[in-house]
Length: 160
Image (cartoon, rainbow, N blue to C red; front, top):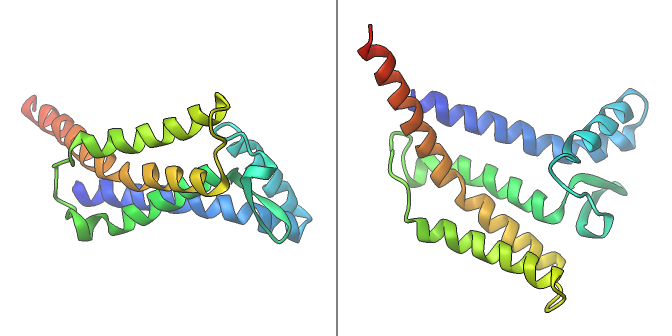
């Protein structure tokens, strides 16, 4: 079951991330592909503000999410790819919550300082904080999912 969960994370994060960068390519190609791109922009608008000044561009077209989200999703995918080499697919152990809270604090601080007008965040600060949280999350989500579905599996088979 651990491999199924891991490969589910890998496939979903790959497709999610790849489509972010295919949207501007499809938009550039035009025709039917432009309609797919329009769908992509609408689809990702549910998770991201997509502000032009805060986004990467490919072929003159904005990627489907901002730089923070792009960095987060790319780092998430990269972390999922590295996960079995760092933790092993069968690991059910999560790192210290300190790492997760540090990543969340830095992201929240970057947003809060900008919104409050104390310090304006930058393209680079958004990329770093997004990338950091994206890289950290799989080390909690994958073993958490393995533990969750493992417990469900045990409960189902206890009642048979």
